[in-house]
Structures are given as structure tokens and as C-alpha cells.
Amino acid sequence: MSDDRANNLDVLSRRVNWKSTQMRARVRRRYWADRLFRLSGFSAVVIAGLFLLFLLGNIIQNGISGFMQTSIEIDIAFDPTLLPDPTLPPDQFSAALARADMQRLLRQALMAEFPNVSGRRDIIQLTRMLSSGARAQLRQVILKDPSVIGTTKRVRILASDEVDQVMKGNIDVGVSEENRKLQDKELAWLGRFQQEDRVSLSFHSRFITGGDSREPELVGVRGAITGSALTLLVTLLTAFPVGLAAAIYLEEFAPRNRFTDIIEVNINNLAAVPSIVFGLLGLAFFLGFMGMARSAPLVGGLTLALLTLPTIIISARAAIAAVPGSIRDAARGLGASPMQVAFHHVVPLAMPGIMTGTIIGMARALGESAPLLMIGMVAFIVDVPGGVNDPATVLPVQIYLWADSPERAFIEKTSAAIMVLLFFLISMNGLAIWLRQRFERKW
Image 1: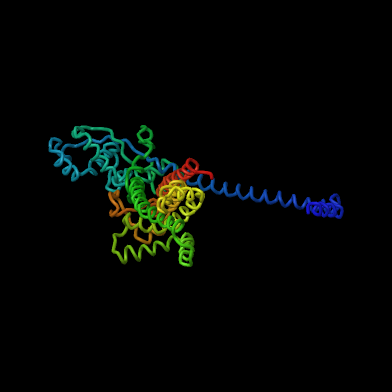
Image 2 (image 1 turned 45 degrees about the vertical axis):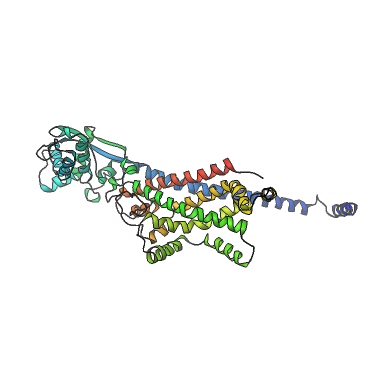
């Protein structure tokens, strides 16, 4: 048989002139097609990388200033006639301080800085150079040290978002007065503070530790981060045990028949269903039928659990199927029951792959906004949620709300929140990669 094959190859080689012009042209075309394919693939990778770099660069360029905020140092005279007696008990002192006229303290301090400013309109413009959160800042200063009452102290006060945008260069002060929000006299007042080195641009910790606000200089992502954490906790506690149990049953115990085939097809199809469909399901079942609270992490987590369940089942089944059959045969040979084979041998060996798929599914749930919009997690929430039934929002929805705001300062806050969201997404995907490389077994 081998002799016949050798003879056939010898006959073919004699019939084909490998050095002919036609054969050389065919070889050149083959090599050219190969090089063209390689070049096309490399170009696609380069173009995708350039688009990714452009996207990330644009987000970082716009968002890095969102972590910074302008402050102005003001000499505040803590008038004892406007403030409560510091010798009062702490509870009474705090309650009386909440009713104190902090706006008047700020107005008097600014009037002392600019004694030539007169007229109600000019005074209002002068005070509007400071943030509306300045009153809360003064209360915190007094609560921290009641002995400042009756003294004058220089306090760093948050500037308004217009002043902040001027300091960051986002408002062109060279255009005519009618084409910008700050008038010439306001720029002159700001210039006076700058000459005295009393204007600073520093890291704004409130953006990390605060909740949402109508004012751009007062917004924070802590409420959205807490809401996302509570929502993902509910999602994990719901989807992981259900998905793992379904995967174990389908892969280890379920008989191969038409019914299980239909289930497998439906699971695969559910993984490709648009996320907003799961939002409609959550709206109809959890809110409409069960009457659960709107805009709560509990409802959001259950809705996202429906979304991530197919992904967890598919990844868990793939990890379980990758365990060699010899492991099962050896366990059965030693007298293990089917349940012991699955839970004592197969599942522990498949757990790295199961955890990797689960983390990837959770990362997808973290970035989803459409299902949560359908169940009402688009409300304006100022307070940080303390439980799964408290009103809350999540990072993607918070980004959506800020992106829809008309103020120029919200653009950088939106990009900064996207950077925070990308940090958590990259961290979760990095954890999945580490788990796969650290615990993956090669059979």
C-alpha cells in the first residue's frame, strides 16, 4: 500500500512542473494571500486598540478633574449673637446649631472682605461664589470645635461650580460678559482672592464619601457604590447557589432526553436575551405581582440574578464537564455514591472555573443599567442606603443621571464616575483572571 502511494506521488511530481511560471505564480498568490490575511488581522487589532485608547484617554482627560474641587479661604467671624451657647449639652447645642443662620455669617464675612460691595443684587452674586454646601461646612467646623464661637478663623469653603470651572479652565474668561455665567465683577472678586493666594484646587474627598446632590460640587459616589454593593450581594446570594445546583444536576444527574435538551437550549438562548427584557420581567413579577419596594437593592439584585443566572449555569457546566471522567470512575471504584462523587470530587476540582464564570457574570451585572431603570432605580437618592430595602441607586444609573444634567460641571463628574466604575470592572475581571491562572488544572 505504501509503495503504491509512493509511486502515485512520483507520477504526480513528474506531471507537475514545480518550476514553471504558472506554478510560481500560484505559490506567490498563496503567500500574498497569507500575508494579506496576517496584515488584516494585525490592522484590526491596532484599530481596536486605538479606539480603546481614544475612549479611555477621553474619559481620563475629562474625569481626572472631577476628583478635584476649588476652595476659597474666608475669614469667618463666628458671631456669638448668631450662634448657640457652647456650654449647652451636646444634643441641645447640635439642635440649636442646626437652626442658626449660617448664611448670614458667610454674608458678613464676604462683606468684610469687600466693603465696597453694596446693593442687594451684588451681595447675592458675591455670596453665590461659594457653594450652597458652605453652611453645612461651617456647622461641621463649629461642631468639631465649639470654642471658635466668638473668634475669627480662616476657613476653607467650597467654591461654586461656576468658579470651579473657571479655575479648571473649562470656562473661557476671554469671551464677552454676556456669553459666560460669571460677570466681570465676579471675576474681579475671584482675582482678588487669587492674588492673596486664598484659592486652591485640591482633591475632593466628598466625591468619594458623599451621596448625590443637585449641585455638581457636592455630588459623591458613595451612595451609588453602596447601592451597587448591596445589589450585587443579593445577586450573588441568589444566582450562585441556584446556578451551581442547576449546573450540577444537568451535568451529573439529569437523564439525556428531549426534556433536558429543551432546558439546555433555553438556557443558552436566555444568555443572549437583551437585558431590558429581564427588567420587564422584574417589573412585572417583583413589583407588579409580589408588590416589593421600588428602587431597592433587593429588587435590583433579584432582577440582575435572573440576568446572570444563564451565564453562571453555562460556565459552571463547562467547568464541571472539563473534569476528566477518570476522576469519577476512581471515586465510584472506591465506593463513593453519585452525590459524593459530585460534591467531594468533581465540584471542588471545577470550582476555579465556576468562580471565574461567576465573577465575569457579576461584572456584567455591575455594568448593567437598563434592567434597573425598568424597576425604578433611577430616582434621585441623596442618602446612602443602609440595607437592601432602602431606596438606592447604582453606579451605571448614577452615571446616566449625571450625563443627563445640563450643568457643565456634571460632565467631569460623569467621567470621574465612569473611572470609578471601570476600576471595579477591571478589578473583578482581574480577579477572575488571577483565579483562573492560580487554580486552573491541566488534565
